[in-house]
Image (cartoon, rainbow, N blue to C red; front, side):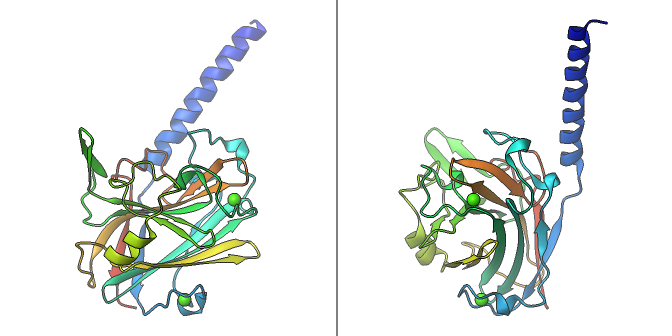
Length: 255
Ligand SMILES: [Ca+2]
Ligand SMILES: [Ca+2]
């Protein structure tokens, strides 16, 4: 067998392996997270989260590839990994993200929110699945939210991509978040990276014990040359900004 033939077989084998890996990831069970009822103060201090379970997102099984992000650009958990937790109280849900990122780029330099160091919360607030938005000509109607939070000083927030397609970095929606979502956010740099505390009321959703929403979370990493890695909670290799079928579940419970 010629060297070229051997190479061709190797390429075919690798492609099949990649496809199998992708299929395995999609078939992987969808995770769930029970958010406890607890009063949280959004002040950048994580003490009020003591004892609340962490969802750990680390290791290569949580990497998402595409849009220029490749396996060789991720240099281990110290380069990018994170944990998230959630709680609820009265009409608000709260999140604490603790991100390990060895190089926080602040201020952000990339033209769109998601190309910078950035936390994303993907929320199917009515737990319906399907497409996250429908488009009719230029009009985009949201069925779920793709929210971006940048750990810059001050933090930048993006919550409604029907009003701001592609989330240009120059048009943050902090004002909208504060007004329509009663939104609060606080970021703090840490020795390993940063943490972020987030609280908001979900438009059109009354929170109560037993409420279930679809959710995924992810964190993007720019170490100075644009976005190079992305870790995602579900680990699903799908178009996560379009479909909500792969999301995990967020359940509101009593502590
Ligand atoms: Ca706090
Ligand atoms: Ca970074």
